[in-house]
Length: 215
Image (cartoon, rainbow, N blue to C red):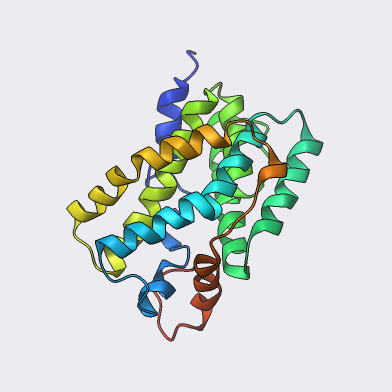
């Protein structure tokens, strides 16, 4: 049997159809909209750019690269522990654990990889290495999918039109490329977050009287 094309695999794994449940998480956008921090396309793009450059987009990309470069189970276990510690609240921790477990389960079923349950960026990075996918492409597509999922939440919540949602994704393409390049060494000593308002919104989400998303 011919091995799957790793580029096609990446697109499949990051597709909204892949069963990780990404559509159920807003990453704090729902609370930010309720608080008035996100009102239109411009404020949504600023919010998502902050999450990408200074929040979990940056941290997750470094974790993906570190997992891709990992040398064994001990490395992966340490990265999984770090990924959990970086989650600013219970809902975001549930998000990365839930998506990671769902992703690992699907990949094991489809490809029979020796892939442990782990937070999502760790599981994804390890699977990408096992599939032989090149790290620069892995990071670029992973970050684009991160942005696209937040854009999808904003389109449903603000609400934004589909075209405005695509304008946000297109507008953030240079930042996605730059963040992928910066994350490529996988240096976890340089990991960190400075998106306090994003983190606070994710913590406030559980107090909303009504909500559509799990985070």
